[in-house]
Image (cartoon, rainbow, N blue to C red; front, side):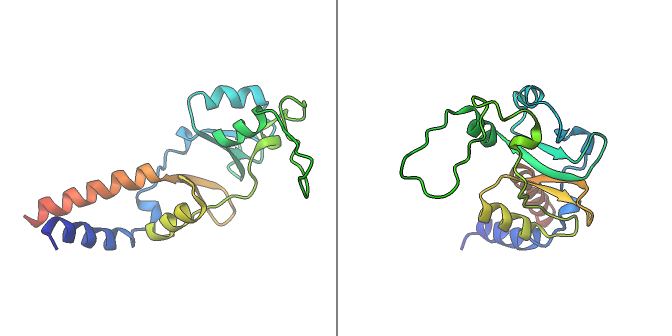
Length: 169
């Protein structure tokens, strides 16, 4: 095994044990947040510059109740094609049908979250298992504390690896 490969493995094993709170994005004022009663037009406006928006219980609150992603917008924008052989409930949430008016109407309520004390390894496993790129970091009362993204994890890992190699030599 080459020296560079050993370095990566060594650093990654230790990086797994780093608490999320030490590397997550903490600038909560910089995160895209809306209340659940935010009009759909405003969601579209925000999503022109962002890939997601966190949905709070009410304006001024940090109580996280949902998330809206580009995929959620695609689902309500695309025309509904109901097949005659569909079994079970059919999702008729649609802009075209006029039943989407607020953030609450399209947000995903089943949140996969991380906590400040969780380790990087746990966050990566959740991201991989649920095929998501970002996790909200919440406190015990489900108040938004920050977020962790795969991009943040990659950037931080590269920094640690670079630092390790500089200090090792």
